[in-house]
Image (spheres, rainbow, N blue to C red):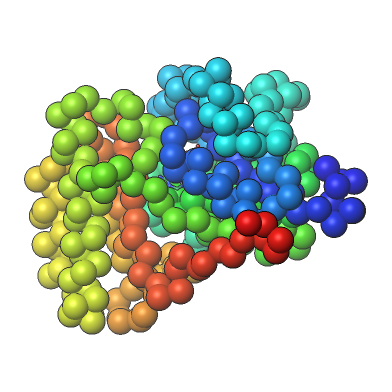
Length: 282
Ligand code: AMP
């Protein structure tokens, strides 16, 4: 990869945990448009799972994932074993993320998660040596952490945040959706419906109002089994907003049955940025 990089080729990298769906495949499509060579990564990273989380039961449909990536025209697949990524067991050096970014939203409920993410992402970038990386807006906080990782550690990498791909009824696609029973699946649609409702109310009222948030919480509470958070935050600092500003992210994490689902909507006139086709491509 280093040689290709030196020749001026753009190497697009899409790291995932596998169990691929159209959300992942859309990242591949963006990567293909923006780069000469596309590398997909599949690695279920133990470092970012808590002791009571689903690391062991996380779906790993290897053959189907490989078939999908081939069909999408991915050039390389990096699919290491845990022992390949962590040959000495638990690492002694980690990438630490400032509490201001990780003591909020998901980080508050998943201690150590973003430290695990930042560490594995730094390792993957070091191994694959991409010029461009593609992450989904669905995991918004992760995107912010990775963007800061690249900036703060002076990595020579372009970061691309790509829009969330949804099911027809609005549910954000996720590898974890397959855990939902039919009844839970029907209830889960209220998550995105509530976020879009709240966005429309905020845009219409042009103010952050506690009563709007309370109404959204009431609506969501009827459908889901637990709400970890529903916050309106600054897109860069992730701190809760109290006053009106034009760019905002509304983010939530909820439990439906035993499945934890996250979603967000980005209020930003410039998102998603239009990605132009490479020069010379048809
Ligand atoms: P994961 O396999 O869940 O770790 O996700 C790998 C990458 O795919 C991350 O950058 C996610 O943000 C992205 N991703 C997951 N679901 C979606 C979705 N529904 N739409 C767009 N990107 C997604």
